[in-house]
Length: 288
Ligand SMILES: C[S@@+](CC[C@H](N)C(=O)[O-])C[C@H]1O[C@@H](n2cnc3c(N)ncnc32)[C@H](O)[C@@H]1O
Image: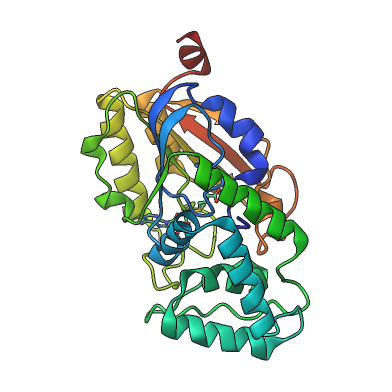
């Protein structure tokens, strides 16, 4: 999935940080599911996100045969004459989606939407403008979708739609693993601003998440947290102190962040320091 803040580009750095064997792998802020869908070694993968319309789409992907899904997409593109220049067709499909809520229409809209963004207003109407001359359902999107559907149908993947604070962490034990890729407190992703009809991300959510991870650590449950420590002159001091206080482990990531955000104009390599924090060392998991 082409998803803002998606971790596809850094998977080669991320996946080796995870244990080789896990019972449940929880991708708590799954977004485009780039991590959950590509992780190996878990008996079950749970992809969670608080955008329920996104989770409805994944469930629709899972509950229908790939041929049916691809044929629905092609028929809809033909019916609305969607192209890189047909704004009216896009707006007509957006209207239909906002009335009928056929989950697959969300996928098609995102393909043609400005910067492939998912934006809802306070009434939960999808509002992303048309991506004129930039966005379309092209052959590379189609082959990514086919690969995505293949993974969803061949692996044990479950989807859930909870605010992270309402997720049932009590059901987890020390054979399970929690990966968190939340909105970053010190960057301006479109999902932090609270203007998408869904909750934004502020200091309150940041500290609530760190508290949850601390409790998981006390119960012997391993976690990995993606984040940035510095970004364009800002520092996440809460995170820094929390890592320090608990002796958690920092794994620097050769950053792709500057390239993945449309709004980021500063492309100097050290504009942000992207990291993964774990409550174990790499040696600990590879000795097992
Ligand atoms: C950085 S994106 C995740 C990208 C994902 N790792 C990928 O590779 O595609 C963060 C996600 O957190 C979700 N999110 C934001 N606030 C949330 C909350 N309170 N509870 C659950 N999910 C939330 C957003 O909808 C967004 O999809």
